Length: 492
Image (tube, rainbow, N blue to C red; front, side, top):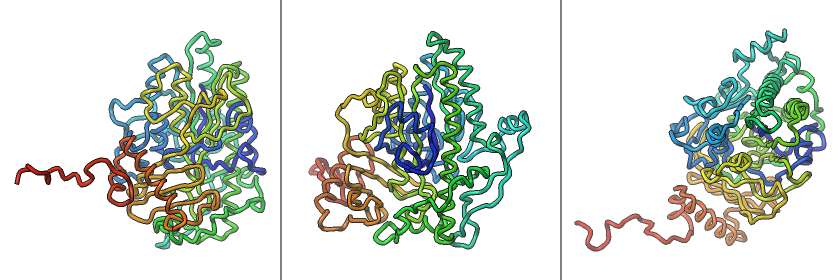
């Protein structure tokens, strides 16, 4: 199994999803040779919790690793002892496990603690000071990391904003992305030798690129690859934040969107496209190695991302407490031996569903991945009954901020306990600019969605439903006041 993953990757940057400008032939080929999921979503749009859900097959509220450690606000920083992970299951079943790239899965435990081989590349961005990367550069006579032409805005207190992009003074062979692909190929060759034509030890090899997560730091040929004039700015840049939770406007100020000229927004998106192409080329190198080693016909290939990226949509960058399609919808491809080729599926699937898929491919029991469902029936062209919704959650980043989202074919309901709730009609308003939660013509829809979300949360054991019980019109079948002490016969 080969598992390819990007970070903070918008669906609309890929040719397979209809982008006419960005060159992604290698990812497009994986989609063409297998299944493309058009309604693939993350369980939560933040790195560590999403990656923990992939590792465990459990929703964030259940595995409880709810925040990135760099901005942790008091949540757990590692998975609990005894938490099921697909990695430990595969390792116990005799698999060689490899992970090249981003881990971001905890503070004390590294990928090696779960059985993965590979250098420990800590953090949320390319660790360009890591000894193994520096050795790679030195062995090849390549220059070390150096940047210029930094792009950033100004925060509300007048300080420089977060770095969004910069020009990298290295050739492509020196980039961290090229390094990751090179090390992946080296490990692939070693695992292929152990696998010996399907008669030896099987392998699961993951390459987790740190990009195209911002900042977009790229060599000249990628930084300038796409003309900013080609960029069609997101319609949601017209966001006014009227009738929206105030936190969205606050986040817009944090990311300093309004302090930068519109030309910079076009340039940032063009640079983001260049980053996607750089990663696609490295994936192409890995896939060519798979073919050269004769593994192509018996290797399952997965591609997805932990979550999306705003790149100026809704006057935001990065991700945060705003459950828009830009950051919750993710790319998802699956190519398996004997599967359908060139297939497009519209079922609501999740990043978490890759966990059960990996386990089933390995012939292991997928039941411990309690919030995951194997995608293999879909990849083989079957049509099983499937949920007509996606349920997502968020717990905060710079500060605690609990949210729950129910996404159906047409509508999206977001419950924000500290603020106003949101309801979007994605057929009439695909850019999610009009919050229609209070619109009387959608009262019946709102009630139906609230009831559905409430029952889904209760059924899975997510105690967020306790807030909903007294606050909204939801059906209950228990003592909602928890006041058994008031019953007759209670001690006085």
